[in-house]
Image (cartoon, rainbow, N blue to C red; front, side, top):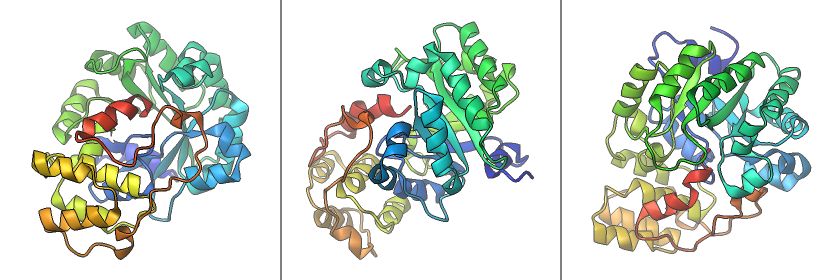
Length: 350
């Protein structure tokens, strides 16, 4: 055992692999992290937080990051395009988490134009400077990591990961697609090569829609961590082996204290996709109040013992700190198909 709970997960001989909830804009907030931890998720990431805004704005700090004593181990992901912002933001947040991560994968146009996310793959010196500078400030019991996408060539991808390893990262997360790819199958062969070419743990991200997917991919690639985004959003019980959202997870969600109706409802839209028939799902997805949502589930799924405060949630989101919300329209209702919501945000999950 080390004094680092994240590294201890990777070193645990009883774990075939570490089960990880991905950083997802809007969706991997405290409440959802609480839920997936009930279903054998070992490690959670926050949504990406813009480092410059986090440093400059107390409002941003209050809005973008919430945690509690049970929310561990936890990695905070930052979007940054220079080492100064990355280090300053990390120093502010590091007492409240177990490690920080640099986003080098977001393929959104705004991110590329501003030098964030996947644009950093074209500027590896910035990535290496961010890691080196923070490594000099970081306590030994905290991790520093990088989440990236593949380059257009296996050799280039391996070389980049080796360069990043040499700067002192604790682990690397690799989304198995390039920045230009969207729904193509992930490149497991490249992930296998990367894992065999570095000595730090490699986390595989992409196409994990079930526990069996995670097991199969781990056996082929050898990666020591398996990270799910879309799969765990639709099924918080994924890592516990459930094929679809267990009814108990819906009950648990209704008993976690929430602060915003839209996020509360959107998660339920994903979770209930296969629990409700099509006509009922269409009605449910268009409900406008927390009271109606709870009453509907009590009637359709025979849910009981709902936390009273979840019946009176409001819709206001409050301030947001970062351009990564600019392309997401806040809706008062959601569409009849949860995939429509996913399509509007999925490229932000890096």
